Length: 80
Image 1 (cartoon, one colour):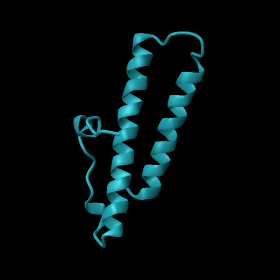
Image 2 (cartoon, rainbow, N blue to C red):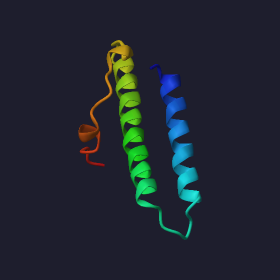
Image 3 (cartoon, rainbow, N blue to C red):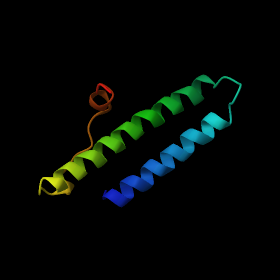
């Protein structure tokens, strides 16, 4: 997946996340919807991490295609 495809995927995930949140303003999400929202957050973190890896590799003169998506447990463990 190249940078443009990653950005497109990020935009789709954000759009779905926002739609889910807007659909429940003032009301609670169902358990299933909350799980989906949580999953979207993890997928977004993974996509952003991969995009940052690709950009860093490119900036260091390395091949961005050698970057790999990291496991959810890794990206969710990062400190902000």
